[in-house]
Image 1 (spheres, rainbow, N blue to C red):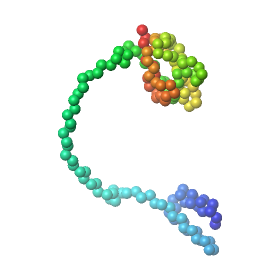
Image 2 (spheres, one colour):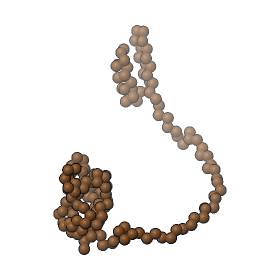
Image 3 (cartoon, rainbow, N blue to C red):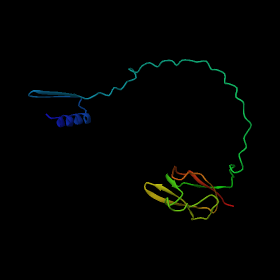
Image 4 (cartoon, helix red, strand yellow):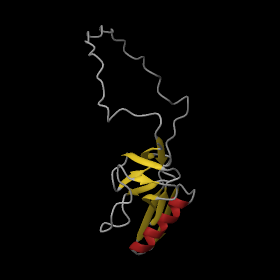
Amino acid sequence: MDFRQIQDLIKMINKSNIGELTIEEKDFKITIKQKKDEKLTYAQAPAPQPLPVYGIAPAPHVAVAAPVELPAAEVKNDNYITIKSPMIGTFYRRPSPDKPIFAEVGDEIAPGTVVCIIEAMKLFNEIESEVSGKIVKILIEDASPVEYDQPLFLVDPA
């Protein structure tokens, strides 16, 4: 019996329900045993040990700082419309590295204006705006992964 035949036997035994196989030829003997799954039953499971009890230390006193006001540029306006990702993929701001960016902060957009591309499964999908307005903020870095319904742009419709 050669090495390849032994390997084939081992594979067949692993796929079957055979627990042990012994083969004897003239001056050769081999025994192949399959490992048994050792699953604990409720009766065999070790008894749970009680958890140690520790005393609770009083929390240290922490001084609370006065509220910090955000700069005017960072304050979000409830009037902004969010353009969200319609799919999972990779966000790109330009059609290729040597081409200009689709949309920049301050650009005026209208419905149907391409604002970015999302690559999903080797397909490049142009994402068009469904609103008109001015782009206030781009929320995603170029070539970053995006999730479904993740905000991409903030648009001021005014």
